[in-house]
Length: 253
Image (tube, rainbow, N blue to C red; front, side):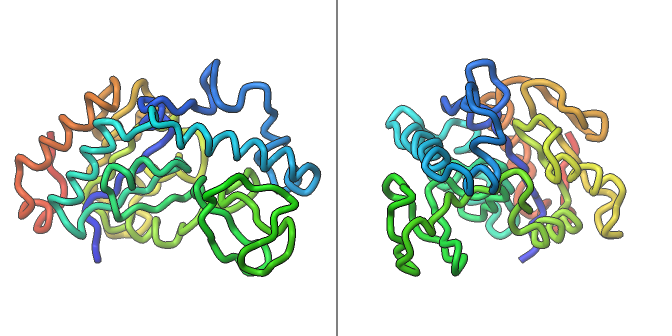
């Protein structure tokens, strides 16, 4: 499979569904130091506190009011219209892309609704609150399950596949991301430098509420709510017809 369109999504797209973001004044991490809830050291030091933090995040995600928005749905429609040609790489740990209908999704920072056995690396559904006293459903040991979330100091997931897709894509869309969390913040520079020697002509697009730190590296930028920008941009892609994408890659707007 060769995905012609690679789409990076960040917290901004989920914020429009009501999920609080890291840097907002009233955001999810307020009153919590990163070092206390999002590092391996924190989990070793206070597993109950860390598990409680992610249990609350899961509770928020299960709120019936939290639903995929128009941007999520537009990306799912794009994948359905161009089968095998669209890859969503998300920094978000929620399941809103999947709920909207996207199937070719990489969660580079993990998934909130999964847990990981620390002994076997096996993933299991996190369909109930996790607790250090809970026995692992894989290995049977108490306290072995941890949130399947990439913490600070850990390597994001599936990076080899992501870079392979970036090196071959015709268009790269960055949606709802601040551009200051690496390695994702470096994706547009990777493409612009043509490090793979393959996609030096790839079209790069930023659709964001405001310019990211790497905005100057994009060939095209549009600013405003994702729920407005993304459906309109997807409509523009589809107006060109699937054959244009399979044959030549990007549509220039």
